[in-house]
Length: 168
Image 1 (cartoon, rainbow, N blue to C red):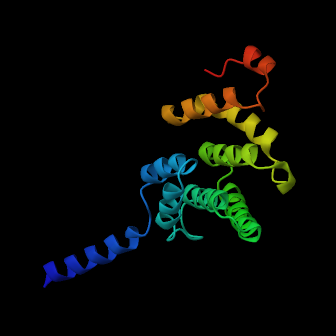
Image 2 (image 1 turned 90 degrees about the horizontal axis):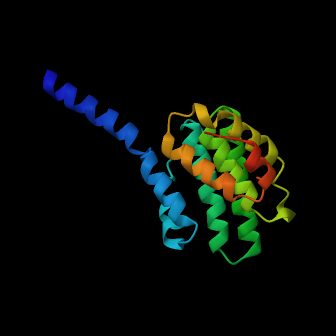
Image 3 (image 1 turned 90 degrees about the vertical axis):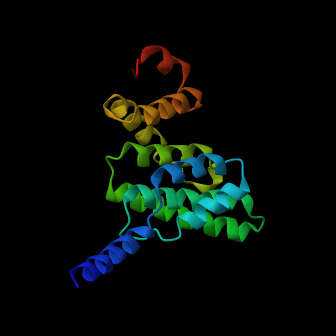
């Protein structure tokens, strides 16, 4: 009897966590989705179970996945709907966890790659400053390298700043 109850409880616990995707898989698909519609579709499908009670990082990736879909649809109205939904999710994630360097990095990446007419570029300087100030404190060295590489390649990080700042 006890074994049956234990197995049923284990089943419920496993099912409740089954909807949350593995963050490493999400990160890999996000990177691949920049150049692959198939990866973008897989990422969106993987994140379908992400909701308001999910971690802010997954919510942010869900928003980024929505925006990535806009790259691959033809209809301008659908593009704009994807953009608006993605923006809402990203801003929700930042609001829930403003000190998360990866969330701030994702917003920075999104904002620096969108066309200016969408008017979603108001946090670029703020996020850049936050990233530069907190890069040394992140324990994730892989993420820190991605951030640093992106900052150095970005037009939002002028040569004068590259010479005057030692981020590591």
